[in-house]
Image 1 (cartoon, chains in turn purple, blue):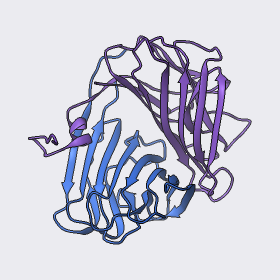
Image 2 (tube, helix red, strand yellow):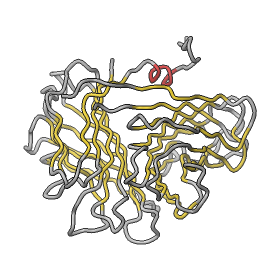
Image 3 (cartoon, one colour):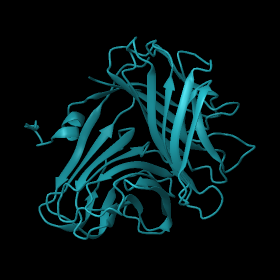
Image 4 (cartoon, chains in turn orange, red):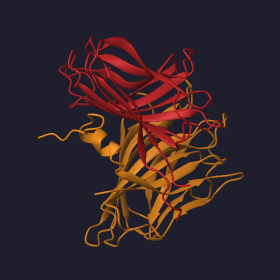
Length: 196
Length: 173
């Protein structure tokens, strides 16, 4: 049996969207200057899942035109308790799978480093499922990337990414860092709660 | 933490009563943080891509990078200096409106300082094994203009019964 909205006729995912299944929790827009770290703390525990929506550029000067992910840590845990997998590519026909264990943080993929053109930002959406339970290890999955409309150098990147945090603790804090670099002005990261 | 101030809001929807090569959403409110477009469509020619243009701009300032799989192999590919960015590189299933579904997110669409990018996740119930069955695409228009309208288009026709729904997503203030 399908359930249909009496208001718009929406079904399935459209019906879920229409019924406000997602609520904004917090949002950070990097202002003049830069930000070394964006932290969401005191995260409410009354949602089923969390979603992170991001647009950003990283001010890495040693690799202009390159790209990478931002670091993600839960509950200020910077120990080797994260395992990450990703699948992606630069649009050149090669798909690059990657996996590494015992990292000191997860990642949200994927953002351009300092660009010749300052207006090019990467975008990413990440979901953290059942973040408030106290019996399971926590997983974040995300998709994201950027395109530079350029035929040379690092032209673009698109990624599917996931990581495991080997802790059963409910997630109450999320830190998004860019190593020794910074989030550039106009980067924005927003956190949402998804109802069960 | 900031107080809750918003949520998903349906801005507009369109169920095609006749086949057409393009669908336009105009006068998009600038009051949200992100947009989400939900597409469920078929194309009259098997394998045609679905593309998007912003603000009526047909110049060659669009690009996209995609990652897709057919069930037997995975690939990435790009369009550069194009007149539209791909939401789905190839839509299979031909004449059925339910052959492709795509969720397209436009992040920070109303700012006037960054080029505008989107992420599209598409799945095709394709009848042709060589066409992408699942794909992710990141596209960009090389302009800092806020997105006030966009047109979804296809080289052939988008079939009767195809649906398009546009939502606004508000971040916490």
